[in-house]
Image (cartoon, rainbow, N blue to C red):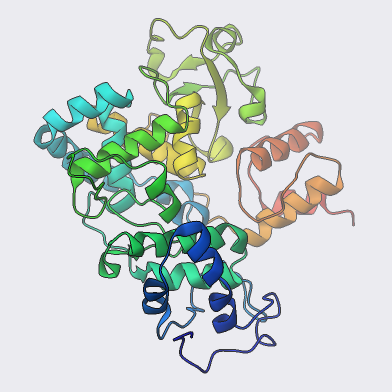
Length: 399
């Protein structure tokens, strides 16, 4: 018998859900038992008194405007990649590199992921453990599985979270982001069963309290996502006058030798490292023409698998560079204001209406939107900055 509290909103309140919250959660019991090995006692304890958290972003609730809180999707690149914050994190990261040198030696040897990258993940995700996510993972994942805009994804994540409880993880430890990521290096529940590594050898990969376990698990996840040993994440470059940011994106990948032949060079005249001529790279300009541009490698893609944002991966890459002794970007990030979802969506709709290959209209700006915006600007005699703006919206308007 379900121990859920009564008094939840009806299905009429949540038009995009097929069942009221308590019925939906109870309907997951057979799958939790049969596929995830969750006992009835664990299930009932987890859902006792459980109520949905309708303050979460990215919910499909009738009459509620979509909220997006992930910083890589709401703040301008110049704000997200704040140099002062990166500097503070890099100082802490260098200290941790010394403190955990022996463990990082082993992690680097086993997984082939350079220590500064692993530390940068740790720094970006929880400020090296200084930040504790505010949400109860069970409540967050139950809500997102019930009425989230990506509820199909969160369905299994909720069940994996129950499995963690079944295996003895204390619920009090399971503090999560609004999307359900947990631990020092922020793993989704399913990732606890596919990417963790028990560095300490005690039979349990503790991502909540063990820094070595968390670092090793982050390295394993990157390796599982295709990390290539001894390859940099990317290089800040100068785009030649014969090219522009509209060449951006993974679909335009070339070898470094080909990029160099087109006139692309590293900032400050820095030499290219030996041995990369035949490695693949693509152009990435996270602020369009309003900030630095990079030639990024397959390892940048691996970081994006950890969090699918160009800004996130750029943050991690630069923080790693700083931990190794590097500094700020050579090209400044010009202030362009926050990323306004309505403008981005209008640009995506306008580009799609004109035949550009925009497959998803979501109000988020990624390399595909930037590239297609730049190509439209180029073909219409506009200044090519590859960035959604009100001017671009007006130009795309059929009126």
